[in-house]
Amino acid sequence: MEQWAELRREHFVGGKSIKELARATGLSRNTIRRALRSERPPSYARASRASVLEPFKDEIHRLLGEDPKLPGVRVRELLEPCGCTVSKTVVDDYLREVRPLFAPPPRSFQRTVYRPGEVCQFDVWQPRAEVPVGHGQTRRGWVVVACLGYSRAGAGVLVFSTQTEDLLAGIAGCLERLGGLPKILVWDRQAGIHGHGGRPSEAFAAFCGQLKVAWQFCEPADPQAKGAVERLQGYAETNFEPGRVFANERDFQDQLDAWFLKVNARRHKTLRERPVDRMRAEFDQMTALPPELPDTSRRWVTRVAPDPHLRVDTNDYSLDSRLVGRRVEIRVDQREIRAVALDTGEVACRHARVFARHRTITALEHARALRQSRRSPAETPVEVRPLARYDALTA
Image 1 (tube, rainbow, N blue to C red):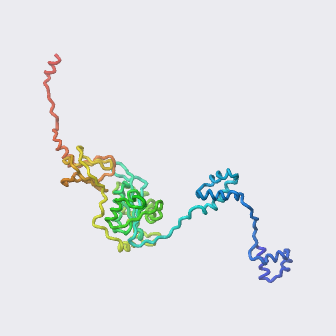
Image 2: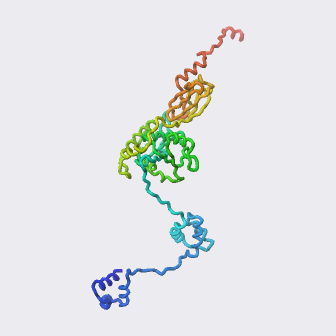
């Protein structure tokens, strides 16, 4: 390479003739002529020869056409009856070269730009540690996480199940904390929110209809479609939970709200702005929250049993014993257990919800009413016989 460049320099720049170059270098004139005529530097090239896989390439192509993910070990096994004894390295190298020709084209992505007030993405995050719920117990919890697409402002609400009512309560809580209604609520195909075939569940459709917002579901196994909330959730996993101690579920929610206030006021790495500053543009486009958000409570009707208690989530809550035998409507939300008589509207119970398990919660007025309804004396009268009667029986 260096000699080729030197010959060209001496001839074209230095003006030396071929005869002078032959005398100085000892090379033949023909060699020097070829070097001067060649526009590319000399290179060593081995004569090409047929690959040892050449007789089997058609069969390899057929196998990859049927299954592009067929592993190399299995390809070699299927080629053995054809007389193939090629080494594993040769087969793997060839498969690495031709497999992309048979595999479906790789997915490409485009950057999405959100308009203010357009989209709010949702997801469910499961904290690693269980949440204390009182009475010396802990319980597995989930956090419904929301993230506005334009401002990247986020919010989260703790729930203790992934049932539809709890997920809807989480959505309502997030919207309250964000302070407005976007045009579209984006979800993956979360059970309870997604019904079937890209359609919402009845409860979620009713929820969105009351709020006058639209919904959109991502394609199956497509978390990239809601990357904003995925990144916020990942940030929460690594920055909120580690090193924190919670007294109970309300303390968890209070610390979570305070953390989101801090996160929304930080400078976003991608946007180069603070989410709270971009929220001004969001509020200009978002719809104001209604005076009352849709009711997400679980409701059912039951009859007060002779043992006047109501079982909710493994816990027994006392009912008014004066309503035994009458039908009451039960309403359970994230904070309270309520029951109302259907015929008269009397309040059968009103308890703060307890998330610890296998507890009996009795209101003092219910215990007093139950005792009065029994009307039983404090002591049961027992006949007292004279001892002389026993003496007469033994005499």
